[in-house]
Image (tube, rainbow, N blue to C red):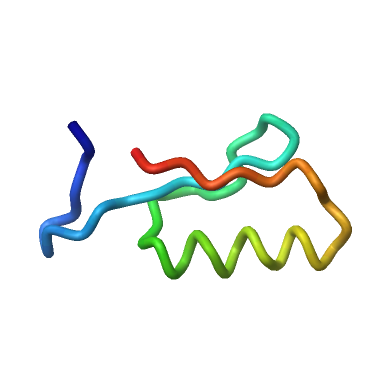
Length: 51
C-alpha cells in the first residue's frame, strides 16, 4: 500500500548516501528533479523511494 496526497498522487522521497535529503514528501516530478540536481553535483548514491 502506498501513501498518496489529497489529489491522489503517489508521493516520493529522495535519499543520497543513505540520508533523506528532502524535508517533505514530493511528487514524482519533484523527486526526479531533486535527484538529478544531486547527480549533477557528482553524487552517485541517489535513490528515489515511493512512500
